[in-house]
Image 1 (spheres, rainbow, N blue to C red):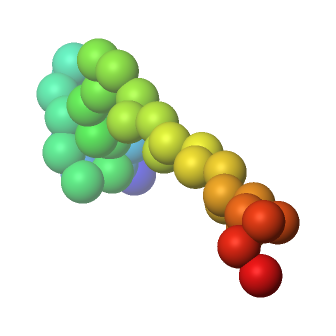
Image 2 (tube, rainbow, N blue to C red):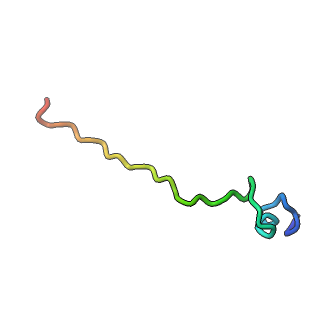
Image 3 (cartoon, rainbow, N blue to C red):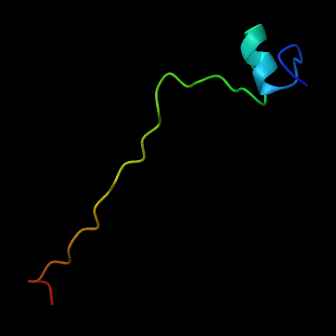
Length: 45
């Protein structure tokens, strides 16, 4: 288990490969939209 082990994160960094332990980085982050709750209409009582 070390730099030569393809199945470990450290080994994948050395080899330059990706997988379950070292996923590829996403190009952009999916941002969740913050939707404000609408205030109730005061004239509609």
